[in-house]
Image 1: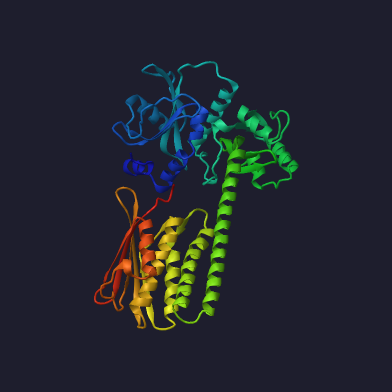
Image 2 (image 1 turned 60 degrees about the horizontal axis):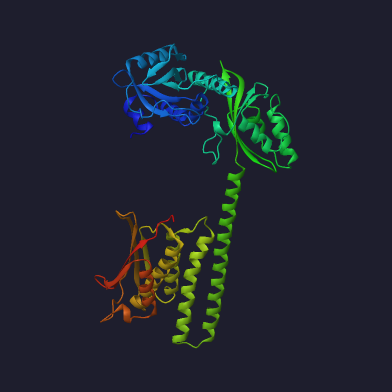
Length: 493
């Protein structure tokens, strides 16, 4: 199905700012649908009868009207007349009689969506009247607030461009709690869920008739918490803004929508939600992440201590095979420590391996440069991968680069090239191909990996752990070329 942006581009000649206004409306109109207990449909000029549906939202608070998706459809002639009327008069227009569709009685009205005095679309509201009964005070208040927001849509006062975007998880919705304020910030109505949220914060007694800003400020002060500067703005409903209030017993997120009639603020709608449990879980995750990072940090420190002890021991061993073996062990322990160092700086059990590969390559080359000139290149990207894959891959790359420098180039100048390619297979798995080539002396006659040194046997074993394969071949015109192919574990478990 086409997105709203694609449908607007293909159907209308709206300016970029007008299309963005419709995106802003659609991003926030669930609020109106829930307050209205009704479906909302956005129509723009286009289609066979002059109008085309480009977006649709169903209520979370009541029965829906349109079970099938109507986005992309053209309007009927009778509905087009209602849309034309709303667009022409720039006022809300309601059908005098309910519409019958199958066994459903539907109340329909339309409101022009205006931007800078120009009608850019029309929004229709469709309420299912099946099983209608005498409305409660909650329903009457919600519909009154919905009508106010609809009128604000027709004057270009809703949605608000000043409202912050990218709110945290737990943003309040109509079902979480609604408070209606008058122009002075007094509570005219509070839904049962809203009253419960205020009581969980520590307020005792009735909320109706109280100044909400004073009630909340007193609760925060008694709890010894810092009062956020946005609290007064939100709790009085003076501006479209959000805040989060924390007391010793609860954490509540609040959102204010000023109600503007004929350019004058007449009150406000406050949405609020108790997010205490949500924030507790987030804090647990943060604590868990911090603990995991601390563990990786300590593992890295311990590995570096082991490497230092091995290095100290190597200094006491006379030159020879034992000294070389200890120095190799120091390098391998350091490679593993590098992975844990990277993990200790992140927030999950994945790492960006490119930094690890570059640091390892530079470390080997810098040591080799003390005796002869070695150039290196690195092309492609490893990307992010799981910690267990990163540890094995770090050892493989380190061993192969070390072999290229130590055995391929020996005591001559030369170069080592690392090339990486990562692709997604049809099965969804990630396949990684690493090519390490040098222009050195090449493979010895009769080379067989199973009979080679410890480093080569380590590489072969780790390649199997990564469900990979590895081969050594001659590089042209000279040197050795090693191709390693592995399948990486998915980033999410």
